[in-house]
Length: 71
Image 1 (cartoon, rainbow, N blue to C red):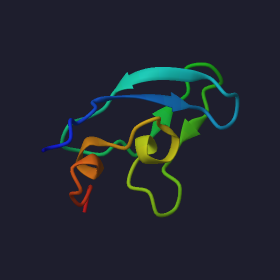
Image 2 (tube, one colour; image 1 turned 60 degrees about the vertical axis):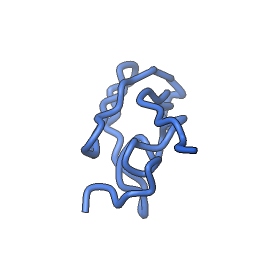
Image 3 (cartoon, helix red, strand yellow; image 1 turned 180 degrees about the horizontal axis):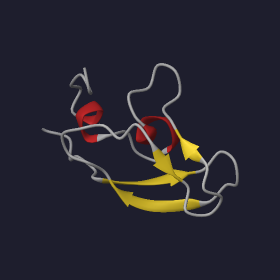
Image 4 (cartoon, rainbow, N blue to C red; image 1 turned 60 degrees about the horizontal axis):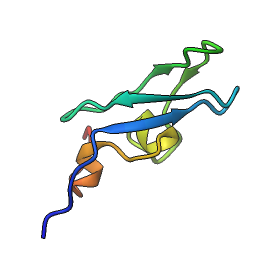
């Protein structure tokens, strides 16, 4: 049975703790994200492909599908 892919993720800013539900790109990675509260620019942590994999409640769709992401 194929796992259902989740296309929304809650990003949590590591600086101020602000959380925001965002729709993730389906076939690409998002390398930068600006916190709507404190304006900090988030970048992926080392070893992660995108901001959703680093700061989101869900990994990006390609990672959820066990595909290589953004390579």
